[in-house]
Image (cartoon, rainbow, N blue to C red; front, side, top):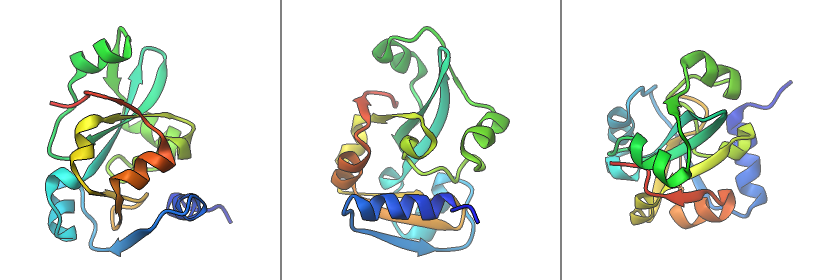
Length: 155
């Protein structure tokens, strides 16, 4: 039986020696719903967006209280075109529905780009491959485990 994304992520984090907590809850479909059910601030949510930057797909992580700053991303990353992946592309790349993707592009052979403002949060929270499962961990452990490219990608 194939491992779920949650299983793969849990194994990866354990292998990296990362301490994390798991919260199972009713399904959530917006960042606001997720923050409410977790009892956490919206800013601590690590929103994972799959985008196509020129010819490659990347996973961009933003604080959940912010939006993607497309012009800034293109400038910082040196790409000419940037667009959100379609629902079909997201499902093909990850096997997941949008909104359930954890901020670990490495799980899907994607580069991870992270907005530097997420560092303002001591702990980050995110859906872990399922709309009804969240993980909470320190921002420091996230960066150590995933080693994302950092930049100013949000507004």
